[in-house]
Image (cartoon, rainbow over all chains, first blue to last red; front, top):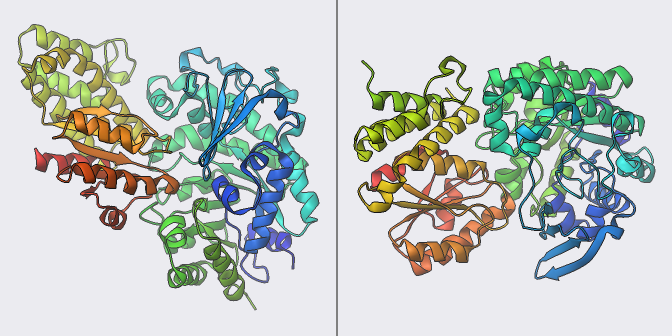
Length: 392
Length: 221
């Protein structure tokens, strides 16, 4: 059975030949261990596709999450120069801004004065919002434009032609062997990235009417992007909704500011495609699994255990089995990054014992694999999943 | 009858910044912490009294409610904002030495880490418990922490990190600080950090949440 088929059965809550294995890797992990240089990974669709595939093969994963969008083929024409000092690379752009590349973490885009741009809520006109990608190469801007072209786009033309290039390249290069997932940011995550976290969180209380108008507008772009990923051949779409856990919001705030929009995103994508749409929320979601399921999501990703999160895995499985698929729960820090062979073995066996029966489970770390996680630990995780995850 | 200090404390606790602030809706068109504190100063109420029985009392309740999951980050940010706006009226008294705070607390997110919401929440809660907070910001190199401690050798230092990639810089920073200031107390916090990491890195206290840091600092002052 191919990884693609295995994942597909599990994502439909079924029982394939064995439990699939697929972790979301941090960008820094690709920088450190894919064998491809940072600039190529970050700035080219081809380079990132190659990095994704290199580590999927090394770790025997059944699926790949394409967690950066495609890149403009002409990015180099906007570069003034590239400086390298110690471990850090700095790309200076012709517009005076610059991007700093640590060796092991996501690059960050700075204004010429060294600040990171965020507009004030008072500047925002909700009807000018459609989608915000915080990791596009020219960072956050408003009204949002892609790369350095400065070209204002709207409606059906909002997303540039290259947006799904990485998904397409991964599909082409893996030739149907693995499950390829696209990613969209939830409207709530986009809003927090746009305004900066503290300002956005206070605005929920100070100006809820405007916040709802912004979230509504961002929902439309998110649906559009999700559909375009499905049409590009993605086998599933992940909604990245990192800030919707109890570390930030109450259940009531989740119901007001997150749930209605994710529900619309899921429904909107599903109206135009039949692929699974699932939700990635970090940290404390133990108190809101019922609400997450009520969004119509096909699956729940992460399920961080204590101390990073609040999910008691046995309870979560009892609550969700047969309703949504589950992916995650291995503690990416305390078990995988800092763990030894015994800890990792115990971690895998514990999850399989709890979640394997009846299918619908994908063995995975809860949150992203930390950049400096030893590849040997991931190889071990993959091997243990394959050896012990069989249903026959 | 509710005293002026009770009203200030109520505004801080509820996150009512000033008259024009629309939050909380049930306090619409009422004076907020800003106007009431200004009025209290004009009335000759001692700044110490305002600090203790207005701000600190309120922020103590806010911290406890946050730890008990009765309020969440948005409400806590509003309370902290109300307090910090009102605190501006006390600044002249701090500068003249008429009003003393519990001590100096220097806080920053360690080098390489650009996340600061957790650090800022801790800074606000600690300021609200009566400490002078020097917030060095995010992505702070160890040399900058050392430099800041040179200016305030009796301070307590707080280090924050959200990323597993940057938590390792905590240990470097702690080493550099302890080498020059062996008696210095250092608190650490952040999502990937735990007690074991704290022990190994040589920090003095692991704060699982901002209120834990406040409680620890109370014991020191």
